Image (cartoon, rainbow, N blue to C red; front, side, top):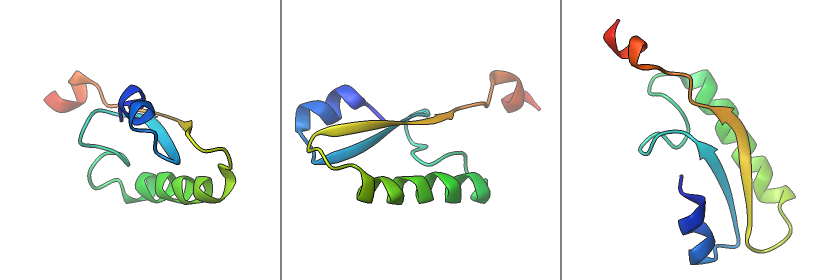
Length: 70
């Protein structure tokens, strides 16, 4: 969730996703979205070869303030 902290800790491999803190694999109850993200994360475990690599996943948080009010 915070690539600058992940980089400082020097983990062997990591993925970064631009979601709010507390939502590392997506919104609650959106199982389909969560499965896709989790599947991509597991694939990265095999494909990232260089230590210290931080891969940014292409997903973006789409929820807005308006959706909270509905």
